[in-house]
Amino acid sequence: VPALEQEAENATVSQGAVESNHAGFSGTGFVNYDNVAGSSVEYTITADQGGEHELTFRYANGTTTDRPVSVTVDGAAAQTVSFPGTGAWTTWQTRTARVALHAGANKIKATATTANGGPNADKLSAVLVGPVDNEPP
Ligand code: GCU
Image (cartoon, rainbow, N blue to C red):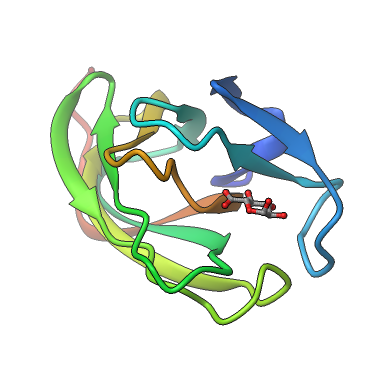
């Protein structure tokens, strides 16, 4: 069973850079979103069963300003997730969102909605929390 998680540094990054200069990340680094609206990280989460999942985004935001992102699944179902300040760029916290995933590969894109860009993004993980949907995608 594939792990329901992906490191940001292994995801598809648009307008951002993989860096490792702030300790405490998992894997080999994190993504520093460019400080522009529209910068994004697109994760692939391969779910073994369809259904409602809780997504957990691990991040750091060393500023005191929220860095909200718009989250889509396969281009749809947009919702905004807030990433408030964590106190330091080396202090990593999590925020969650609930989305429906289908069995197989789901593209989960987190796009910055403000000119500050997104937070520093470490990892996305997913856990099945709702009724199982075994309909084919
Ligand atoms: C600093 C910090 C970066 C961060 C950036 C930002 O430059 O070192 O890791 O991404 O601020 O404000 O986005």
